[in-house]
Image 1 (spheres, rainbow, N blue to C red):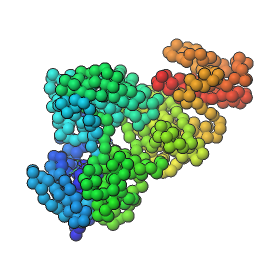
Image 2 (image 1 turned 180 degrees about the horizontal axis):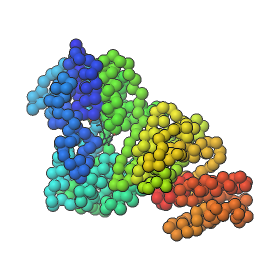
Image 3 (image 1 turned 180 degrees about the vertical axis):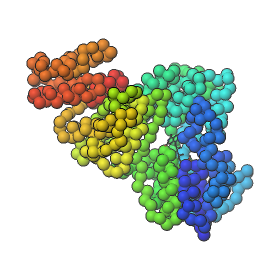
Length: 544
Ligand code: FAD
């Protein structure tokens, strides 16, 4: 029989171990984890901060004893692997200040990622700066927030974890300030899609500072100094500025690392040593949209890779096809999600692309409780290939981004989106689902029925002499309107065409983009040169 040693006993490592056992009853399977817990729910950690997940024990999915009983796996928590000798096929394992040498036939690295902690002046003297990666981290933060003298929390970094921690500590009643270096929170989303999150955070009492970094700490960590020299008083600080692959062990074993020290693996998860495999947050994956190496630190890929590496170890040929990066976060009453590449990434790649935004209701608008969803699709105008999508709203965002993520994995194009036949009854969706609508809108662009202009190009277009035409009802303008737009309500447009100048280029807008598209079609068929402001006033107002 073969002896498998797995380093890391959480998402990827434990998926690999249990699948391996299901495939091979005879193998010896040993899992080492440096931490006191294995098989815990990292993704659930933030929700214990508020008490939404009330019991800490809920976060511990399986104990070593349970894993041994059910799967006959030898799981060793508090065992740190300190060195690998690929030639001898041995690892050095440290436990309670003792080191032992353990042999393996095949080794799997599932060492995950580590939170990045910047070396800032004063940070070493700060004993109130934490990161959140595992249960001991959670325990430390819980002890700090249970201290009734602690009221003020500073969150550094507004990515997925920073937002979840901010929400949960705010729900706990603490005074939360979130500082994000990028121009907007949730940098994986594009600016206009993430903009409503800032408002949502502020509405719920979180102070949000964007475009500013933390420069240093003073006063034993109780004063944070920002890059613009303002100061923030804080009782505790959570650093959530991102993660890096935990690849030091692989590096010192001489295994090949790539971009940002991600472990390089082949399409069977083999590292540069054929007896050592690697999976999860520690590895470089192929971003399936552009084929480039990427670090995608998410639970779904880690779990899948764990299963797939076990298949390969057990002789089932399972290809590592790569990842696209599909993610979601709840921020109070809003949900934001994305899949694939964002517009910035597509721009940087220099790919020809088009963008379309839609704002539609999550279910039939006549059925009570419907909520708007804003969706964004980024695609190739030549091939219809979907590069990425983003969504934000109060309900139904998860479903739509999941559908598009599935479409991307299935190599569907924008022309296929209207063809998707999705569940519909009034409480759940619409006969034209938001994803169908997004496809229709994209196809209108591809087929030349519509030409749109993005919110960021509007100021230059107006400066160049184009005229904004707002086709909302006059009564709607009081709630917010563009400066210098002329207003002809859609219903009056046909009768009032004579008021428009045939030599002028018009940019049409309304609230959500539906009426402006209808106006565009009327105007085009009467020979006008016209562009549709994508996402219309609602999108523009959110970001400006
Ligand atoms: P991990 O699950 O981190 O496991 C790696 C393990 O290896 C660790 O326990 C570590 O201690 C151990 N280890 C490392 N080096 C050694 C060594 N030398 N010896 C022994 N043991 C070692 N993803 C989502 O998709 N959705 C979410 O909602 C989500 N929320 C998250 C919330 C939080 C707070 C965190 C921290 C992560 C979240 N993630 C989420 C990310 C997700 O948890 C990770 O992508 C996933 O756990 C990666 O799996 P992994 O097996 O690669 O690494």
